[in-house]
Image 1 (tube, rainbow, N blue to C red):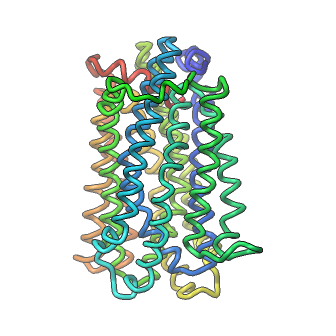
Image 2: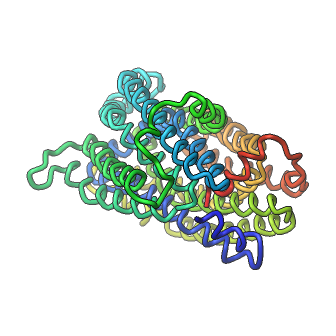
Image 3: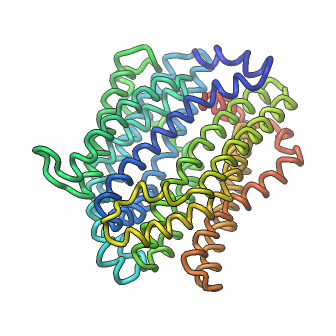
Length: 476
């Protein structure tokens, strides 16, 4: 299995090969995740700029509910990694089954909650008059359909997390590729009503996402129950075992808290953005989707660093762990610096590719989106630094430190800065763009200064070690 297969090369010999062998499947999975968002954004951009704006309103609210259950999928991954590392195959399968049934039940409850509260949640956003009239109803239509299909998403999420904990990232990558391919094909068919399909508009994007995730979920269940690619799960493992469920809740709650506070930051930012005209809202949503192309690969490199640090600290090779972190920082920052230069030099062609020229407010949306992308390109290298350092802290077991610097980036570097520049100083939309860029810059500087102190390597081993060490392998 992957834990044993990679252990020697991760803790011995050169650093470049094991780091990139760990990173590339994770990066591919993250890029495939982005493909969902980019596909929706591209086709909805051909429909109308308002539809793109509606997506930017809907996503933070959807992410808030997803994050609640997301922490528990992480817990399942950690526990599966723990039992797999201990060569207790039956226990790994039992934990996998318990995670699948518990998170699925939780997803059903969140699905009902999200569907019933969609319009109330959107009503909490202090949107500008035109935005309220044109964009909010579209966001509501999208969210209601999306929430109805939420359980399909979580079955796929759980499958991916469990396989990652088992040490297999290639199988989830292949299943994800099939799911994305289905989405790419049916997205425009359902949005525009090609052939015999009805024209569903923004609802079609939601239906396409849910259906394609459903395909991935079915494939994932087949892998778990009928192949040897992951933990040995039996139908009986789905029956509730309160002792295991409690472990999932205990370990998953801190992770859920971190993800939820990130979602709340996104909602707070969205609440500020929707006070502007629709083109600003659309540019914000489109710009965020494009920046996610940079952010998610950086996250993949950070997760690879998590594994490198965790296993090398476990082998008492602190200097090697630190060298792995610096290698990842330099590599990620260098690659994303090049991406930042390209984005700063030619933002207009990149942005205009996602907005139909004949749609309402197209020219203004492209102008604002180009300004947003150009300003945020300054941040790209710092995104890599932040993600790698957070991965290092998590790999060392310092999850509270990682949480602290995530909060610094969001709740000190970004949210108050956006408010101050946009509304107090009066920079308007430009203030939003600049404030967004400062978040990861502040986070990277703070996390980097703390990292150089070296105290992250001196953590006293405690009972959390039994979770931290497997968690490193879980990101394999």
